[in-house]
Image (cartoon, rainbow, N blue to C red; front, top):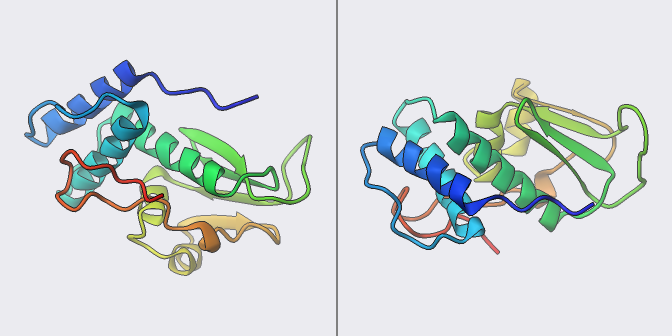
Length: 163
């Protein structure tokens, strides 16, 4: 079953909520779901940089966007990456699991995931600190990270994703 495409209206509402919390004007850029998802990543990172808690919907959108980028970069079903309670994806080529707990699991919180996805923290450091729990022979995501890089000007109009 293909991944559900995010609703641009919901992404825009999440982005505008995060931008308002940061004291920024509403988004005036493109309303494409990918661009809005990237802008959510940038705005959530700006909130973290400012020492603020990200808005819930923007955080969910940013995590979903970066997990989608991971699944696109490393297609497969050998590893399950979990960011509870927000989302999980299967990725990385290899043996497929069908039932129960998969043999290769990565689990972390939303903040740590976004820092990994954007290259602000390294895989080895996150695993060593216990911020990422990784089990299984294929659970090393370092070859696929970072997935996105923050926009040069912060939470402005340029997309975060690297292609």
